[in-house]
Amino acid sequence: MLIDEIFRKANSNPVLDMMEDSAVVDGSARIAVTTDSFVVTPLKFRGGDIGRLAVCGTVNDLLMRGAVPKYITSAYIIETGADTEILEEIAASMAETAREAGVSVIAGDTKVIEGSGGVYINTTGVGFVNDGVNIKSSNCRVGDKLIVSGNLGDHHAAILSERMEIENEIKSDCAPLGGMVENMLRKGIEIHAMRDITRGGLGTILNEFASASGCGFEIDEEKIPVSQTVKAFAKILGLNIMHMGNEGKLAAVVSAADSERALEIIRSSRYGENAAVIGEVTDGGGVVMKTALGGRRIISELYGEGLPRIC
Ligand code: MG
Image (cartoon, rainbow, N blue to C red; front, side, top):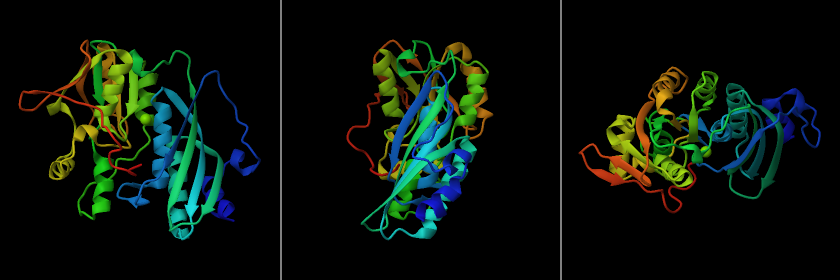
């Protein structure tokens, strides 16, 4: 009943509607696969909900390897006491985000367990990788430019605001990034490495890029895009913007020759209007930030768990 009335109805498509034990779909020579579980609380927040998040997180991970996202699965674990109205809203939001991202939900599952109204979603995504596309962290080269696609910290600050019942204007940036990635690939931008900026923040990603490639990063604090509200929020709570998570932003390492063109493409794509080139790849190891006051600070990974359940 739950499956038919809520989840299948919201995601209806020819493959899912067959209701077979597994979905059989067309493939390609190289496929990208990723899976993620979403446990965010609250289930609905300013700028999104767990359903939108469960699509965006998975679709964005496919895109970061240059894949064209095609299919996702959705598995719900629902605690007793969960509100049916909220479930319907989550399912509808998931379906709408899947349409926006151009993916079909082709398999799904629901399990109900004892509990107190919690909802958790696992999504697996499949995408196709076109010939000649080769995007990975170890491809960063000295002299490459680092672009971030917009303001940092929004999702993290939005979730924290909800939890702490702080009234402000901050909204999650939760969004599928297919537009800007497709536009860059179609125009032949030489993208070397790419990650969506999620839990652990930009600081963690840059350290991962650095250790995978054997290169370093030098970034300019003054060039990092961040809204005044999030900046103030982070300052009050003692949070480091470099370790705050987003759900609709990416970091791309592109060849220096293509960087201005890539920036223009991202800026003119949906969700990319505040993009900026904020630094470059160097031959020293590690990640160094030139601070607004003229100093130099080493940026580390986020150690430990950080803020739990923002995604
Ligand atoms: Mg990712």
